[in-house]
Image 1 (tube, rainbow, N blue to C red):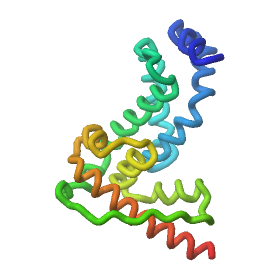
Image 2 (image 1 turned 135 degrees about the vertical axis):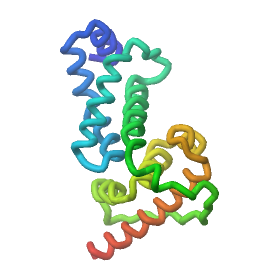
Image 3 (image 1 turned 180 degrees about the horizontal axis):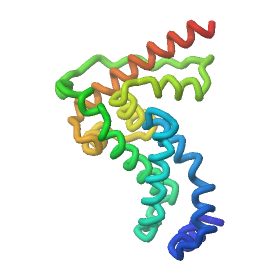
Length: 178
């Protein structure tokens, strides 16, 4: 089924269409959930909540972009709402005006994507969330600030610190594998 057929079927509450939509997008969306969650069970909860929202709100899809992008936005917003209940708020206190020098990006050949995602998962919640939103999802610091209820400077600071910490974790991982 193509996306239009999936949408029409979901609007009719057709179980086959709902299952087909799940089968088509759940793995990619789970990967997004996993980047924001602290563990697999939390990622599964985020995905389930997000997909319920997708099914309940598919009537609001306007086809101005791709269905996948619309679902992705719901998944990210659902993940952020769940994370806002966590310790992230405590982590950022007092950081609004903190600025740090940018770190130079480096590429490491010996690190697989799975290993890198594992290292990102080890970042503190605040760092991980801002890193995911900025570096992976492509949001601006202004957008991140609005989504998380923080200052743009806090977002920049969290991203800089996340990159430094990730760089340190990567270097440690590289030394282990050498």
